[in-house]
Length: 465
Image: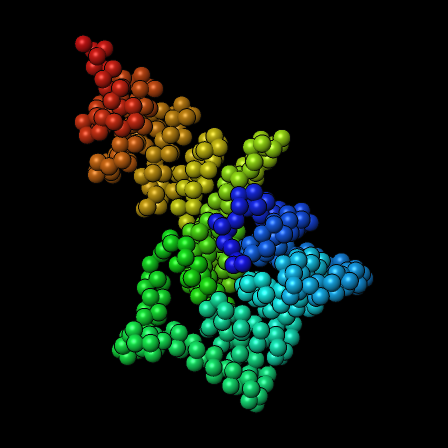
C-alpha cells in the first residue's frame, strides 16, 4: 500500500484534514488532534495528515503538563504498546494507529516510535517510518540500529544522499567500526551508480561520456533555473532543497525556494512555515519576503473559507468570522509593515488600498498621497487620491490631481484610460457634461468597449441629434 498525496485522498477525509489543519493554525490543539487522528485512521498512508498530526502533538507536549502527567500517560500506554508490538507483522496498520495514538500524548515515547517505524516499513510507508526514525535518532544519535534503519528508509524512497549523510553522522560516533565503514562505502557507491549515470553504462544503454556528464545533475540544475508548476517536479525539488537544508539550515535561497514551491502547490500551511523560518534569521525577512509570506497567509485564509461546508448550520457565522479575521490580519499586517518600513511608499499604497476597500476614505487618502512619491506607484496613487477626494465631494481637487497625472502618462494604455474615465466621472459629477464627454470620447476613439464608455458616448450623441 503506497503512501498518498493530498490529491489522492477521498474528499470527505481531505475535508477533515483541512479542518484539522485549520484548528492547528488556531492553536486549538485537542480538536486538531482529534480530527487529524480520525483522518489518518481512515487513510493510514496520508502523509501530509500524519505530518500535521505530529506537529499538533509536539506543540501540545510543548505546553507542558508536568512530570506526573507524563508518568501517568506512559504507564497507561504500556498495555496498548505491548499489544501493538505483538501485531506489528500481522496487522501493521492497526499497530501503526495504536502507536500514533500513544505519540499524540507522548511524542518522545521511544517504544511507540520504534513500533511505529517497524509497522510503517511492513505496511510500505517508508516516508512515515522516517518521521519516527528521525525522532529516535535525535534522542540517540549514536544508536547504530536506528541510524541503519533510517538510512534504509531513505534509500527505499530514492534519497540516497540523505542515507549517506545519516551514515556520515553515525561514523563520527563509531569511526573504527569496520562493518559500518563497509556499509557506508556501499551506500556511497550505490548513490554514484544510480545518480551518476553509470547504471546505463553497465547495461549498455549509455555512454561513458554521458555518465560523466551526469544527466540527473544537469536536470536538477535546469529545474532550479525555472519555476515549475508540475506537481511531481515541485515535490522532487522540495525533497532536494529540504535535504540540503538539513546541513545548511540558514541558507536563505533554499528556504525561499521551498516556501515558493509549497505556495505553488497550494500547500499554504507549509509555505508559511518556511517563511517563518526565514524570519528567524536576523535581517533576512525584507519587505518583499514579508509581503510574500503575508500574501500566503491570506491565501490560506481564503482556502479555509472556501473549504467550509455550506451544509453546516453555522456556515454563515463561520464564514463571517473567518472573513473578519482575514480582513483584520490584512490591515494589522500592513500597518505593521508601514511602521517597520516607513520609507517604502509601495507599502503605503497597499495600506491605502486596504482602507479604500473598507470604505475608510479619510484614512486612505493620506496613504495614497505618500505613495505618490513612489516612482512605481505614483500614477496609480494619484488615481486613487483623486477617487478619495471625489468621494468626499472635493471634485475640483480631484480633477486637478487627475489632469496632473494625465500630463505624466503619455502612453495610451489601460492606466491612461482609467485616468481619463475617472476624470470624466468627476467632471460629470461637477455638472461639466461637455468636458466630461471629451474625456470619454478620447477613450471611445481607441477602445469603445472600455467599461461603459461606448454606451455613454452613444447616448450622449443620440441625445444631441
